[in-house]
Image (tube, rainbow over all chains, first blue to last red; front, side, top):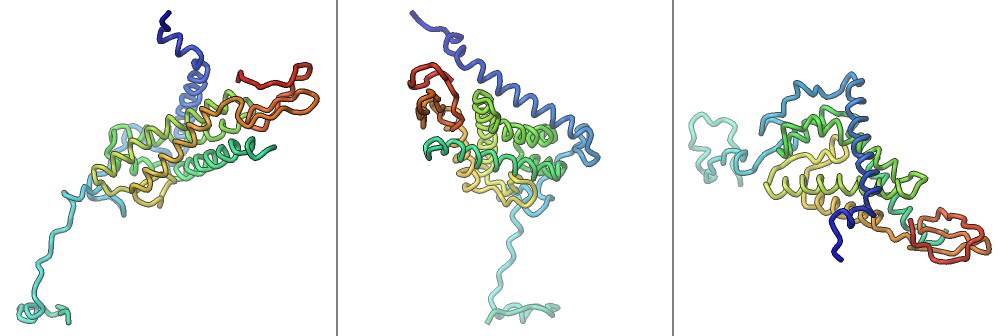
Length: 91
Length: 170
């Protein structure tokens, strides 16, 4: 005798139903709480921040957002660069 | 309560405490949390909805972990496991894509997402699965002459008049 999918699910159905109740109730509570909060999230007008302009840990795919590689000069070169008044030369 | 019977409550306390703390941290700054979710670049169009729904769901599930009814406690653990599967997928995706993003796991200042974050979420998921799969007879102790039976959680159920035996049903 083969057991159907429903036969296998039936024993855990109450557990799944309770879990669904928790998840749905939590979601509803979240929306209700957000609606009554003055500093809640604006659901209709929220705009995701653009890449690479966020805070300390903003999304930066390293390949796209790496800073420009500065030109590396030999120690004697900066002293020969005209107009470079605050160059520091490594000893 | 024996050590064996107390262990599930210890796991419950740690898991519930972490989830409640995480939820309160997120609830303190919902707009900031929404931005952090958007930074994950994981369903960015729904970031604001996740930011609204996730902390309250985490808090509710954490509270249900301590419900008097065992069936609800299991459901709370399963709800936390379900949340952790999604969170684990999100942080793993971020690490694999090499995105440098603030975790937001405990609100602002949670540090960036690393493999350690993935490992932590995996450990929490294991704890939640343990609570869901906790055998009804684990840590079982037969309670004296009255025939009280423990279900592994230390909340003995008096079954007066029945012979002392292993309890199999939830």
